[in-house]
Length: 169
Image (tube, rainbow, N blue to C red; front, side):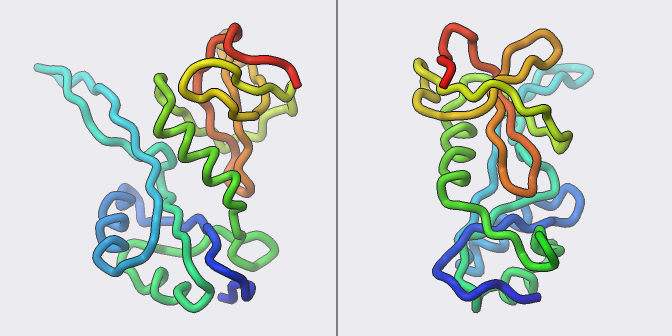
């Protein structure tokens, strides 16, 4: 496993099944800079409605590391491997991570994630609301208009945005 020599970069790391929050806690203890996109959702149990924290991207956590920290990441229990591109860990541009963070933190609707390749759509910019300024592709999914932001090697993160809040680029 070799990470290109560069400054601190973002990488996606596969986690053991349903271990994202445990890996996040272990990274915190180890001093590894990380980001786990979490959203609060309501789940109906047989006797009550409960709010729970749920990872937006199941099976992934993001790390912001120097090349020499890669082994420390992989030595963390529950961290399986880096997401790779051409047999090397695939760096994620800071701008894409900032868009993902902004989408998760400011979206009023739950953020969905799809690994399915979406047909390229109309490029749009969100003009109003908490996500104002984000750029993505307009996708018609199950009759609802959604803005999709592409993330290298990971598919698309999706969130619902009213058609009146976007403009064509």
